Image (cartoon, rainbow, N blue to C red; front, side, top):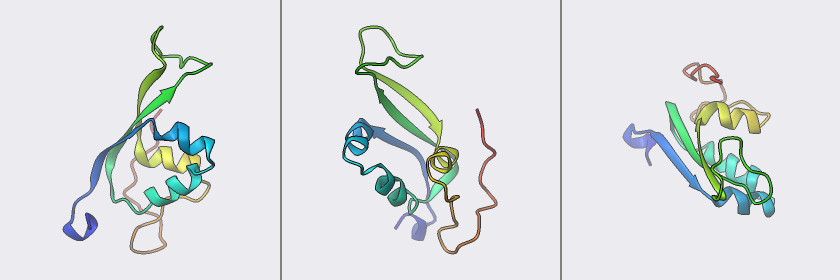
Length: 101
């Protein structure tokens, strides 16, 4: 529906859903579903890293979650061997931003 209206997603907040998806093997299905979202070229994910046993390098002592901001498209490409495909076809989207560290 967003794409039909010419709109795109610029910010996607995952909350702590990742910890449950990884535990229940739903991570790849979640990423596959996200492929249908019309992300803007500069879209970001706001993720929550849960540090039950291993603290994130940028974590704060006393807190179990660390908020992480990442570019959406390069993130998805890094976790899925198939490159992002254009929503209306099977060609690579030439408007993907360069990978940023």
